[in-house]
Image (cartoon, rainbow over all chains, first blue to last red):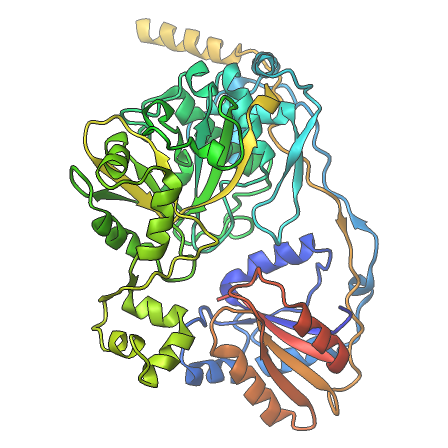
Length: 435
Length: 111
């Protein structure tokens, strides 16, 4: 922009802003630091902070603002050109397996669990799972938009697939997942989770499990494909350095495997499409879909289901910052919604929920300031709704029409259970392209 | 005696662990293009400085504007909240306004 700027940030993010400034090509930005946190702090306290001292430098904050805007630039601050990165050799220096595992762990190249070393032989064997050349570029990935994107090729993905314990026949799925460029370790203080859902003939070919225990650690393909996504996000996506390229305050345990499973396609109710077909792929094509969210919760609604009960359960996701929900229905539940409630397609159930999911009162008023004004002016039904006690459900949906309620059928029909989470669909990629 | 022999054999085996070559599991980070910082102001007097909150906490940056206006009354301090829900959302209209009317800015990021 060419406008002199004095950036100010809370002291907790000192390391982060130094890293980002470097990555944005302005490594000497003149930051002022203030106490952490400031979100939700009263104005009086913030006023004291402004009149106080930078907790890191000990200098008055006001003076630092002025200095940042008026002190002449140094030669370092005027520099142009490039900051070159250390070259990445294709092979590491030969060493004993014990020493190499130690190296991988010390450098943060693992997820903390034991890995299989990606020896040349193992990676060559893994590459038999695809017809693509080892040096073909698969894509780029970054921990979050402020960070630079790292580039990676087929062999690099294969090396991480070996580390995760995957078999060569899983490689097309892992390459497809990598090609989306979606990191599983998104760098946000809110600690995102990810989900990966596989559709198509590849499910049977590599023996993935969409039945009993599909989301439990019971199946090698489900487990290692999901794990590979996290290793790839660390090693090929430039992520997972706490404080720099990973900021999740509490982290998210779902990232170990990223809820990786196939849809139970052979148990879909007649007329309900596989998820990939909903996203434009043909029946018979194999594809993998990525989702972003934070949590998964159980919803035991009982045999026979109850669409109003489902809508009330979904209501927990209908207000707030993201207003997004994905349902994971056991085939029993899916069939109930079709046979007992008449939802002939996933889309019909999704649209019904978009229209009929009620909204928790507090969140509804936050998300609908115009309706709040009408309520205060006595306009009905808003005026009546405004009298509802805190925690009550308002009979109006706050779900966003542009973010569909996604529905996936998964499970082994041992109970009429379902799960749901604040996930939304991000991307779907062809697995067949990477065979 | 027996345990000592076992220990010696074990140490010998560890010492003989053969070396292997592994593929580097790391991707390729791009070079970083350096961006020179904007020239600084010779004085704040008579200048317009924007105080921008990009969206984390709504109480701190307004106080910056108040305190700076009190301490530097010859400067025009303007507070603005960037449009959008969070820090990912761009606000080209605001950036254009600052470029046209402003001489500098204080921008608040982080929680």
